Length: 98
Image (cartoon, rainbow, N blue to C red):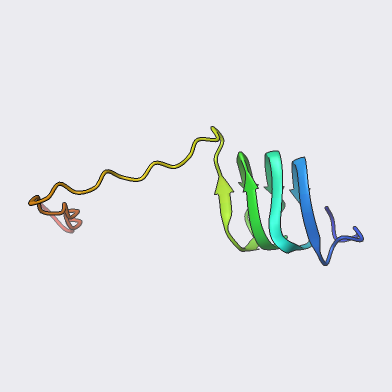
C-alpha cells in the first residue's frame, strides 16, 4: 500500500504479506497477513495488526495493538503463586562502585 492507492484513507486488509507506506487507517480495526507485515519509514498506521512476523522501520507512527506470534502458539499464563509463599520482587538496580 502506498499513498497513491485508492485505499489510502481506510483499509481493511488480509493477505499473505503486506508492505505499508503513507497513511493507513484500518476501518474494522484489523490489518492482518498470513506471513509478514512490513511498515515502511514515515508511515502513519492506525489500527490493530496481526501477523507471524512484523517489521517496523524507524520513523513510523503506529497507533494500535499488535499480535506477533511466529509459532502460532497460544500464550501461557504464569503459574499461580503458592499459598503462604511471599511474592518475589526484583532486586533494585545497583548504582555506583561496589
